Amino acid sequence: MTTETTSARGARRLTAVLRQEEQVKPLELFFDLVFVLAITQCTALMSDNPTWEGLAKGLLVLGVLWWSWVGYAWLTSVVDPEEGMVRLVLLAAMAALLVVSLCVPEAFDDLALLFACAYGVVRAAQIALFVIASRDDPNLRRSVIGLAGGTAVGVGILVGASFADGLLQGALWALALLLDMGEPYLFGAEGWKLVPGHFAERHGLIIIIALGESIVAIGIGAEHGIDAGVVIAAVLGVAVAGALWWLYFDVVALVAARRLSKAAPGRERNDVARDCYSYLHFPMVAGIVLVALGLKKTLAHVDDPLELVPAVALLGGAALYLLAHVAFRWRNVHRFSVQRLGCAILLLALIPAATELTSLTTLAILAAILAALIAWEVRRFAELRDRLRHQIASETAQA
Image 1 (cartoon, rainbow, N blue to C red):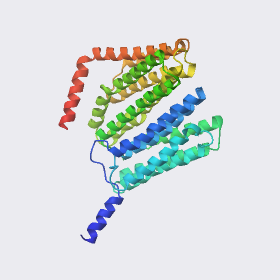
Image 2: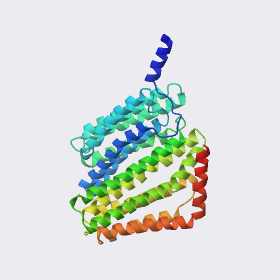
Image 3: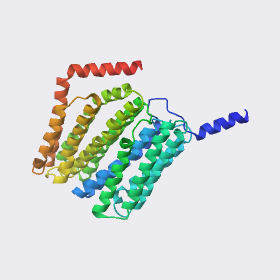
Image 4: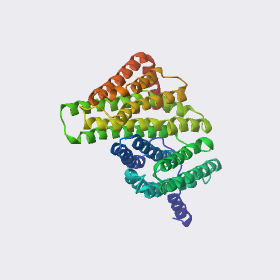
């Protein structure tokens, strides 16, 4: 073996290898396990303080965590996460993200600075890998430089927010999130790269992870004891989670993945990925997390009415999820889902009644509305649904 061969292999171990396969790698799934804890912590933060302030804090933390996850979804759609030094950096980022997750309950209090610093490490690792991956791609390098600037400003504002409190602290968090999420939109998406099948699958998996939190919430809510009411509520909770799964994965996810794959590489595809996945999947995940909060409160007191904030979380969270679907469909195929918009409006209108009915009754109404929506769509669009599912499956098999 020559010295040149040894050096080349050593360099390959230290560099980043561009991604080729569309299938999500095991290390990416391993990375997402830490995000499971982060989502659980956000639900716990809101559950421990079921007020408007607690709800706002939980959603701000979720937004910040979401955007860090989005960064790694884009990263691993550019580079192979299991080649070169990427594997080691991802494991280090996992450790930092774990620290971030542990700090969530006190992210606005005693652990605010530690949260911001650990979050900075998570984002810095992502930027470092993007810099390595873009060394031979000037367009990607320019986009990475813009991302690095926006990220630095966002992290800096979070560090500053750790020394504030009250409304000022919340405003700084909102500003940091707004600037960070706005950077890809303001500075364009021409330079980014992605593998469509991988990118769509990765976001579908994060929806499943969020739905898993609703199942966890059922278990936590039932920890005070199990009786007939709790059993019924648990079954209804699974029905709601299953309905949310159906509404996304039955057709919507398939159509969106095909739309992304057929978009022209470059600006068009990147714009679709940014809008449909990076942006519009956040209200979907936030809606699921809010539903999980409502399920947790319902299982704890099935015979009592929900207080206003948990009622807003349960019904408003499901409405937010449906509204995100309406926007998602419009952005993908420029068609308007009247039935999902109508159901979202109905759920919002039922919030006042939810504070008077037992929480078990409210949960049953939610499950019935979602089931009716699914049944109506299956019947109304039966032929189109069948054709789309088989056509897309055939295209996938041929690819």
